[in-house]
Amino acid sequence: MAEELATYELDGEIALIGLNRPDKRNCMNEGLHKAVAPLILRANQEAKCGIIFGHGDHFCAGLDLAEAMQWINADSEVRLRRRGLWHPTLDSMARGYIPFIAALKGATIGGGLEIASAAHIRVADESTFFALPEGQRGIFVGGGGSVRIQRLMGFARMADLMLTGRVLTAQEGERFGLCQYVTPKGESLERAKSLARRIAKNAPLTNWAVSSCLNRVNDMSHNDGLFMETLISQAVSSQRSYDGLKAFVEHRADKLVEPGKSGDGGETISVKS
Image 1 (tube, helix red, strand yellow):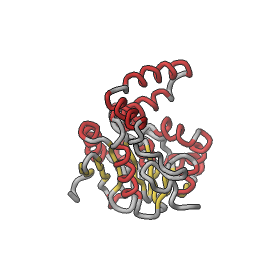
Image 2 (cartoon, helix red, strand yellow):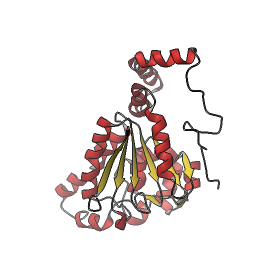
Image 3 (cartoon, helix red, strand yellow):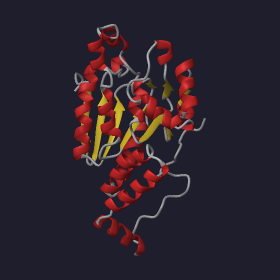
Image 4 (spheres, helix red, strand yellow):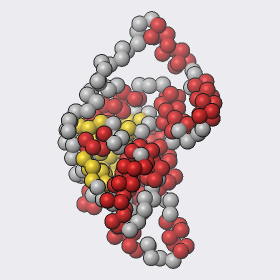
């Protein structure tokens, strides 16, 4: 287990994918990518919700710069083949069949934040810190961050991080849209599991529509988005839909949680700034 660059566990209906380079703060290198990519595809096939997390004290401290130095000055063909390697992998998480939750702690910077931004829900513990130090490294985001992170926090805030080297706390990250939950230190993975178990109870087609279609609607014009919404709302209708509506009408459905609490019944933000 310790020699694997990524771990996989199926906990009931929940797939747990662990980045496993703790001695390198789970920095992304070619080996880690090759290990993670098939696990995301596997989770899409056999789980109802996925969780991605980091072993050790950090989620992911970004690109392995020592490895990057070996190819950044290579010939153009070598560099061409390196570009965009993470795009299809992270798309299979962001636009796959099931929802994904990122359980964050410690360093969630650069490429690590790009991985986290591909998840649908991000749970950070109070040790989490966010940064995009590309400007100081002389590089640019390459794992979809210019699209996903910018949509989460907006151009001005992302530009600030990249240009100035600003580092955000977990609470600032929640306020800026980089995470939806903040937990006490060491509790992000357990909270992610709690949320995942709740999500797994949903109708699978609705989970698919939210995970894979809702973000596509965000890419469309107003009219095209409404047209897609109409198609998807019809596509997810099933016997499960009928049963769910019938349970509500007959007062057998679970009640909504109290305001201020999340779907799993927990606090929406456990740590206040």
